[in-house]
Image 1 (spheres, protein in one colour):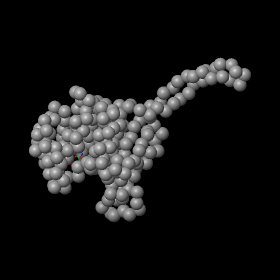
Image 2 (cartoon, protein in one colour; image 1 turned 135 degrees about the vertical axis):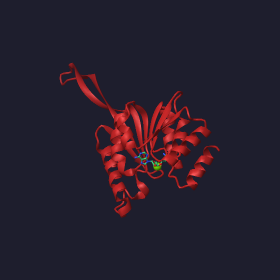
Image 3 (tube, helix red, strand yellow; image 1 turned 60 degrees about the vertical axis):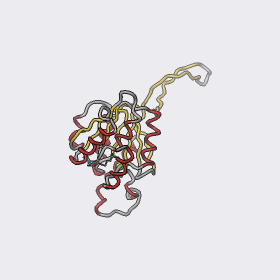
Length: 219
Ligand code: SAH
Ligand code: MG
């Protein structure tokens, strides 16, 4: 089995794997940033983790969290088949319990699990993200429900939490976020790094003085 067969099988089994245009958007950014440490929330059968693993920096690795035992087994098999067991580490269990126990920092976090937990995942992702890191949140527009006022009861809680996620990442002055309409919607968030610097200016009488300025730096 190769990567394409893993993908086809997942689609046949209705496993919600990352969509092609979403994947391409992330791959393009990864090609530039070459992340060494990635955290994924929601492994399913390992498809997205395997795709990302080809764009890791040399020696890089992916930690990916999944709670569904059947999917974990299939993910392990798939990862073995493509010979990426050294790069991809599955953390088994509920991300809500696992995330608060993690301590190391990541260059990239991919949020792709229970939509109702997105605000909590964001809080944890920000805590675990390096200052120049990047957070991707998949399914952020959820079939268009998030931007429309049509709310079927079944989706209402998910939509409320996705809207909360969007509000937080777009209104927080320390964050810089783009929401893209690729796939099922992708939110891309970076931390703004604040840099203080001094520079030389002239006052009204032409005398050189120094002034302190703050600049927001987009990594
Ligand atoms: N990233 C995968 C698809 C993930 S589908 C890909 O693109 O190939 C979402 C997965 O998240 C499901 O397998 C589901 O079991 C898992 N999941 C949902 N909520 C979770 C939670 N709280 N903790 C761990 N896994 C969770
Ligand atoms: Mg998804």
